[in-house]
Image (cartoon, rainbow, N blue to C red):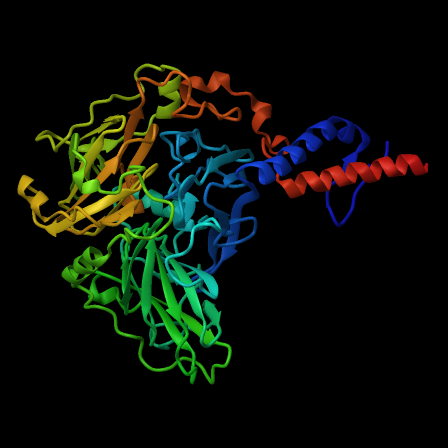
Length: 607
């Protein structure tokens, strides 16, 4: 038997494999080329999620990387492209990847959270396939289970405009992705054990930028030998900075020494363009800002991400610092860090958030409701007031709640239970308001009405800023204020140009109101983005069913490669998810294997 193995391809292929794979490979490549040239293009990615060793704050520890990269690779696509990501789980525990802000129109199967997907077992792979339908903007992905985001596993998502849709600003000279995050020197397994034991995580050990520790701007604060991030730029050019807070629970203020930040987009919506000297970015939020390199480059400049609303005793160590380096810089950055806002001033932060407005004249992909952008004129049909409190004991365990219910994740995902009519997995009885009763663990789901316009008021009776994210949608942030929300609070709503996004902050002792049009069929996760309270149960799912759809026009069918678990474990076909039988090989991998087979055929002819 002839075997071909090349250092170019690193793919040992034999005669039998070629005879078996050749028809499949030809069909795969034809399909990919046909779709790229005949319809919405496909983009294929192969990822291996595994542990790596890194020392963000100078202490060696285990982090989660993707294909040897931490942070992970940027997923760079264009509106309406079909995205196929084959994920191998090389961790020692189950894994899911979720796509923060990607709406997955008609396709909650690709959402990557426990309510819709069975986790990928260790050593297995699973192929996500979804379309970035009618979206543009800056998003990120991350592992959604087992507190894994605290160890990394995140990366950026860029959805570009199609060529026929102009940007509402001049084309930038470059695109720079920045991840800012609080960080602990304890690994994610130890952190989750701390929460499970009923203890608070305590303050973080530092703040990292792109997975790296702070530049040594002050030797009494930052130790020697810590590797820091350097952002290389050219004088006179304008760059688009996409900044994501991928941390656990800390709100961060982002700023660049001597440079203005022109806000242009947040989580898929172009904004009214305004200059800021600094920007508060709360957990799970993403912003795009244009930064022009208009300084004389007498030195490098500081890029700062500092904690907000933290105890003064730990603030100095909770400052991430990177370096902005002009190609003609004359020396290192020097002097004090640029000032941020008063570190306890929540009023400043709220007023800044209120100042962010939707650019209603921009030509681009629009959030729903499709065809109508006067959201203030749409009649609200469902109202939910979701109240959170500080974590409390339920059955002897520390838990976080919404309306007195701490979400209990069943072994069978809600979406699979719904499709296969598995009884007793969940109840469609989540209360519209806080019930004056003892808190409880439950799998209670919001029964959303298809094409209803839902008003959700997020009331924070806790002591820290909470961020909330809704999968499957962009919602309109129409109001926020301190105090208790009442019916009269609607008189303060912005009914014209409130920004449409997927993650919003709620300040302690305050409320935030959002409006969302439920036209995307599926079961969708509404969660605290703060990883500690999310892990302790502060989430709920919204079920949106089209009762008149009997032909899958408003929802895609169950994927052929679905993983089954819980009550449906007996349906699992083991071989369908082993790594060597990927449902969606990348175009390049298929081409390499096909070329290897051709070379084997040539060897046959020669001998």
